[in-house]
Amino acid sequence: MVRHDFHTMVCVENAGDKEVSPRAIKCEGAFQSAENRTLWLFMVGAFAVRFAYARWGLWVAGDSAAYLTIAKNIALHHSFSSTVGVPTAWRPPLYPVLIAALWWTDNAPIAAIILVQIICGSATVVLTYLIAKDRFTRHVALAAALAATFAPMTGHYTAVILTEPVFTFLLILGVFFWGRNRAVAAGLAFGLATLTRTIVIPFLVCLPFLALLSAWRKDLHRYLVIVVCAMAVTSIWIARNAIVFRKFILVQSGGYGVNLFAGTIESEIYGDDVWTKVLKDLERNEGDTQDEAEKDRRYMRQAVDRIRSDSSHYLRARVKQYPRLFLDSGDYLLGSRNTTFTAALHEHRASVVLLKVGFVLGNITIFLLGGYGIVVERRRFVSLSHITLFPIFLVLIHLPMWIESRYSLPIMPLMLIFAARGIESLVLSRMNNTSKVLRDISLKLRSLSFWRRPADKSLGVMNPRNRSIGT
Image (tube, rainbow, N blue to C red; front, side, top):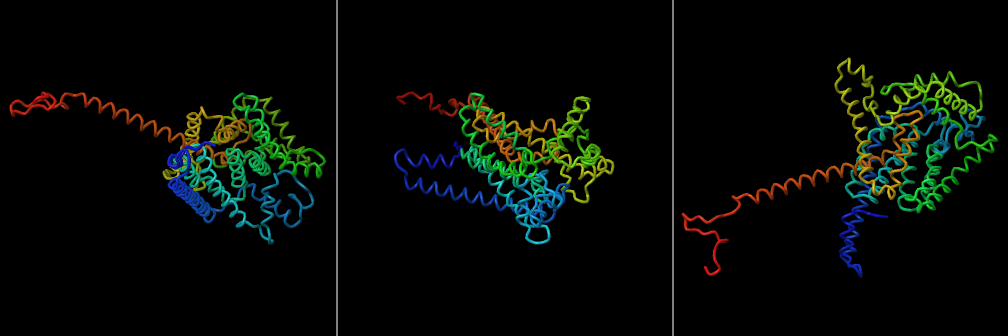
């Protein structure tokens, strides 16, 4: 583990080569105490910000009812099902099970699950700081954690019954353990993340194949341990599906074909309602089958047929959908004042237009700075694999599939780290250029003749430089 930290370096220097001095011990203790205070400040600050979102901005998403229904059936009927007595595998299990564990009365435990999500979001901020601190300067770690604390879309999705806060926490926890060479713990965390969102599965499958490249060959054992431990966790649910449905189902029966099919539907690049057309198209092609896995395979076949029959339409759909991964309009901050971008322009509502444009440009800027940060650290790309690989994977895996802005939330802590690194590089470069310019100006001024002091003969004063030794 490599740490680039000035205070630690000072403490090590004070320690000497042979024995640790009391001064060094005191210095290290003071530094660790300061670090602990920093972690607690971020934890409390992030908690306060997310609590504010939950207190004044609690909302309901389309998938919220599905998670609550499954959780209710688990808690009251001991059945993982959307309809009592009819088992399902359409959703990954961990999030509904978490809700069910908090379901102690007849009413849905909304407050309890939101509190858990606030804690998960706050812990994610702390992990972001620690991950950055392990590989970059303290300035980068502070900037990344501060940005993660106040990230508006992250706070907004804390206040809704959706998987994003829990999944992001488990994913970042896995990255943290991976960066500290704790492969077993990383694998267990990734396994739990897989039981929350199955997007992790193809990432884990690809991970060992990196060892085919010479740069990653030394990490083969670590990657295999991560994958085996993650699969050990997910195999419990895979076995349940095999017993219940008498077939192999990779964690969830739906979502694979649906997302590819939805990716063929042409939508606007920017708009407030992106689901109306998609849902209508999905319902028309749903079919009569009651088998969930077969329904998803049906969507998969239809998606492939659409792509083959009209590839140009599919490319247009991807060109319009894909930018959504990098866009955030900030509509959720407007509340009842929200309207479409076009309507806001026609009605001359400058504040609404400025907020939407500002959020879109801000989100794009973060991704651009993150990409620049990765380029700056290209020589350490392999040693930073735990931070770089999943964001790159997520950006690529969604090229052919349905896109929503919230799909980028799990990688935002990692992108904020690289964005902070990119900003640091730009600032240092600017400071170096300024220092060079000032140094050049100073040298030119020194070379000018008026800096020299010749003898003033009229006053009988001789320049000391011209005095003889015997004077």
